[in-house]
Structure formats: C-alpha cells, structure tokens
Image 1: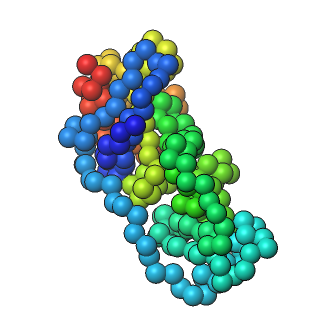
Image 2: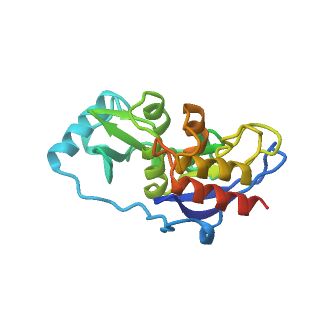
Length: 235
C-alpha cells in the first residue's frame, strides 16, 4: 500500500492507493492535478489543561480502563476538529498492546465512491474523539451524526493514519459526479453541471447528491473543476 498526500477542493486530504479492487476500473487523483493543493499536516501534540486532562482520565477509568490506576493512564491531545471535537490518544502504560503491522483497515464511512478509512499498527496508537464528555471512534461518531463528511475531510488532513480512497467504477455502480446517471463520470456530466451552475438547468436533490463533490450542499464551479480533473485522471 502506498500513500499519496493530497487535498480535495480546499480541504487538506491524503490518499492511500489500495493494491486490489473488484471494480473494472479504479483511479486515484494525483497531487499535481488537484485544486488548492495543501500538504497533509502530521499530527502535533498539543498542550492540554490539567483540569480537562483530569476529567478525561476519570472518564477513561469508568470505561476503557476500568480497574486501572489514574497514574498509569497516558493521555495525549492532538488538537480539535471544528466545533471543539477533541482528538485524544490514551493508553495504560502497564498494559501490553498488539503491534501487528498488518492491522485491519477500518472502513469509516462511504460517500458514493469515496471511502474514508483508519488504519493503525497498534491498539495503543488509536485516536478517538472526545465529544460532550464521551469517547467515540471515528466510525461511531459518524454513524451517530456527531461528525459529518466535512469533519471526515478534516480528519484526513490532521490524523496520520486516517485517509481516503476515490474509486471510479466503470459500468458498475454510480460514481460521484455522475449527475446524468448513465453509470460513468464523463464530459456529459460536466456539461450538465455547468448548466446547473449557470441556472440553465433546474437543480434537483438528485443532482446535488451526485454533483456536490466537495459536500458544500450545492453544485458550483468548484465541483465542475473537480469533475474535470477526475475525468482527466480516468483517461
């Protein structure tokens, strides 16, 4: 598996290429062909107020580390997502943790043909979200509606082992950008999106569902540009 760092539509993103797929065609977007490229920022340890840290340790003693001693709990803060959702790593320094380099990839969420994934080599390295006094895995937080797709894009930019893949399925499932629903993303979709942006074609919920590539809840010139760049990669 090889990792490529990218940003998709003003969000700092990273991309990992998977070695196999059941699709008849599979493509990934290159760094130099993305709009507004910004390199992924490695995780940085952030200072954490003692009172907040004590609160977190007490929560952990009630859940993940029931039976542990407070002095043995190591808490590391890696900053927050928009809205104050805290990125927390924690472990008990007296415990042994698996260090399997072939740890399973966790499928966090699928947005059309974009898959968000989180893969760590050790349970000790797992980052969780601390939201409203409770801990959540990325997947659980997303499934519960506590984070959205924009939060997932933000996670890709700031968590080392969180990434996404973009797959293009030829004559298979409907890919993101396929606004005319012919099973493929092509210039006809770009033309239709341009008409929508110019108010020549009325916008519908279905158009937005598949044409809103940057998840801005509308179809605009940024989505048109993104679709064109993906098509260039497919050719």
